[in-house]
Picture 1 (cartoon, one colour):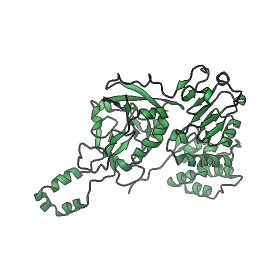
Picture 2 (cartoon, rainbow, N blue to C red):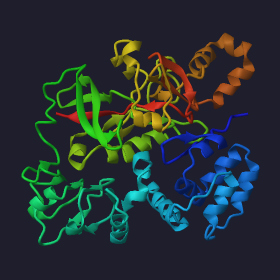
Picture 3 (spheres, one colour):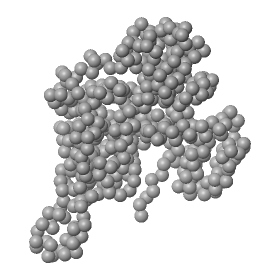
Picture 4 (cartoon, rainbow, N blue to C red):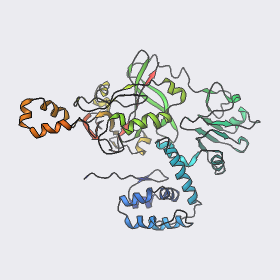
Length: 439
């Protein structure tokens, strides 16, 4: 019987709790109410057979004025009147639901409470004294005179339009330490397309892509470059480091130096090929939109990507190839690393927080293509007439076997390629995105 994968609950301090004792030791009332509203709290309890607690919480009405008190009592923790209303938890759950329609990026979902979808959301966040506000909408009016030391960040490539008071100047924004990133500012505040307005640097505006910064014509295989940004070791996005695998006439082929996040190859049980893998969707949607600006996307070459080759199962069903912007290396492409040691990979702090498991500071990472189920050997045997007569039952079964599998290849902690692979819905493995950058 397959073991059910149990998810952890992340508390406000970043701790992933897996037992009720850990939940009590790291309890956060606001997060508990959020998980109560979205149903995860009851599911988490039921998965671990905390039936009494799960039943007590299931009986609490969502709109009950004393819901927080009852939740705390059911979990065996002391209630504190911290000013967090159930209405706030419902609001956060609704924001998460909205964002999940367009992204699976954990970094964005974790900041749902600080995301404004419209002007009313923005007003609420400003009133609450929020210092970093994420914007996902069309137009926002920013009351500059009433603010100081606030950062506004457009997310998911939405590039929201910012309206500023007519009396606002570049100097005023700098003096008040008001920062804008990935937004569309009024014309007077732009030099070409402004992606960020840095506090204290109001005399110098940065184009969305510095051409000199992304001039990779002189790089060679083995070099390390920086391109795009993603959450890694701090709460803010940092430049992504890439290892150059090959240099072509019109592009360079790179793979991330570190494992950037945790994701299953596929999020459901059953046979799977790269064409339909959940990881392929995540890479080409939420990761692609989070890691690269509009101008950086113009430098990424979309190219044909096969379903993946397994050197020990060349007849296995790898599915159809597709045109992708982001992918992972397959079982033959990992040979671009000179040896197992070069294939060993460390995970970023954020990747570990999302669930990547490490051993001696190194992690396992997914490789594109089917795992080896023995189909190759079986099919070659079936081609032997003597084997067919000696094994009639097995030979007949091969007629219905198309080489499909629910396994995907991985690189082990040691850097060795495991061609047998892991179940595609295995958790704890890292992801090393790969892209082609135009030169």
